[in-house]
Image (cartoon, rainbow, N blue to C red; front, side, top):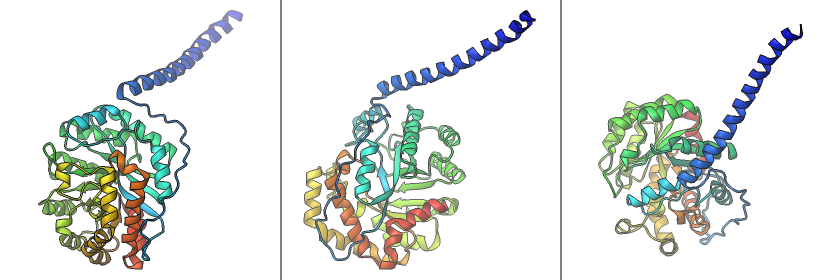
Length: 372
């Protein structure tokens, strides 16, 4: 009888031991793998507890017409997950590309909180190197700040050789259902490298994935690509396209909105010139100090220009416009800069028809998310 019990108990004990050992090994292996990966890519995903001590910036221009309600920022380039990606981008010609080790999401959440921004459309650059590391970074953010960041999977344009294959993007979406709500920014007018075309086969495949996965597509077409945008609006009627920085065809944008309810437009850098106010500064953006000086000296004229260009079109199509900051460079996340950009945006919105203000400020962005 004892031999029988031993024959039964010993194998079961061995099996239980192996199962426990397996899970312990996997847990330790994951910890070691993450630590090694963090060291390789330059900066870990785990951040120290950040104590938010920022104070809301006082308004510099006390305009009577001013929107003071909630804001959704529909255009923010989030710090990249890895210093390697940051270094590669700068070597390729980008002026700046902050990494999460430089600007933490904890800090951004604090900054946007004091600015009255309740939700952010955040663009997370996903190259074909360390894609899983980026996905884990995005998942960590969602776990820490659920619903605060609307996560867009951003292609590393104009460095097309770093684009993940469409099959890789599909795998990311399938393995992480609901993690991403958008695709983009897909920008087609960089001043460096060779620009892609919005109707390239690769991007047609991306729009197809957006259709299948209910993703918003954020797009920055080049000059002369308005007709391409219209063809895409027609070809993918269930995909919401969020365009921006097309000031030369603003009247045409209004006409397209009257035909296609899947076209939205974000007013951001083109009204507050955060990337430059000359000929893109001779292909180089301003410094923080130059930008603040420019904004303070030209606040009123910029406001008049923005209202002259867009107020009538917005009020004719009040359900299809959003507001954004288009922050990307390190100094864009400075509280003084952000405070002035947000003050300008709130002043601009405050000069719109009162029935339209909340729509542009946040309701249209919320509708985009609900109807995608």
